[in-house]
Amino acid sequence: MSQEPSIARHVPVLAAEVLAGLEPLPGCLVLDMTLGGGGHAGMMAARVGPDGWVIGLDCDSEQLERARARLDGLPVELVHARFDQAAEVLRDRGLQADRVLADLGFCSEQLDDPGRGLAFRHEGLADMRLDRTRGEPAHRLLDRLDERELARILWEYGEEKQSRRIARKIVEARHERLPWTTTRLAGIVRSCLPPRGVAGRIDPATRTFQALRIAVNDELGVLESMLRQLPGMVRPGGIAAVISFHSLEDRMVKKGFGDQMIWERITRKPIEAGEAECGENPRARSARLRLARRLP
Image 1: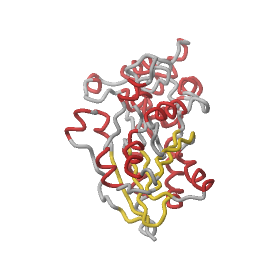
Image 2: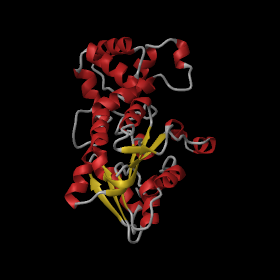
Image 3: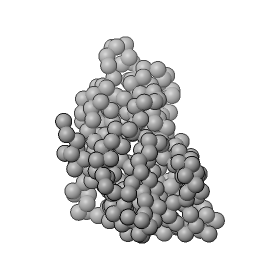
């Protein structure tokens, strides 16, 4: 099947705000640490080229191939790497970037792929790995971890108030010896919550899926490592931007940009999507953009 329809569906969040905040100028070197579908990278490449350059990283090789078609003909170099490896990528080339972007969200292609098990609206094995060439999938964690560790993950990474109850139910369900599919896991979580919890706008399984995905991909550890290395990636006077999608990430980004010896914060409060964008792209509702300038 052709990839073009899938690529066309990708909509980068806060696109206008990212361009206005980063101001990629002709000749700039831009580092997009989370390439995804290539939407942000394509817009920035159009601004910096032909004398500029965009280096786009992604830990998902399948996403890189989709983006390659989208970015054909633009001054973009694609690299298979996690964003906490970005500093090494630049060091290998003897470079510092003028502009740096990290979009910590997911592309629609990833969420809509049943084989990844990222979304409970699609039936599939609960894998949840962004890079399927490494790491332990969620369904193995669900079979291996004890009740206490599962509860800790759900509480710390999902801020799930019913973490102990859900963890207990998961452990009890192991005796059924059924595959840990996304719909089965979501059903177990929903059964642990009172009716009023199920009736809310956000599905009660959302927090559990978030927590497991964070644990599987060590997302907060990778983010912490990236933020620690970020000052060395950006040349003095350059600008860094990070888009986060939940409070755990946003707090870390805010703290990282709060070092007044290194960063001048461009945004005191995160930039959020307007009503029009949220209406067209519901994923934008939880997006938070922060920007900072590297001090001399």
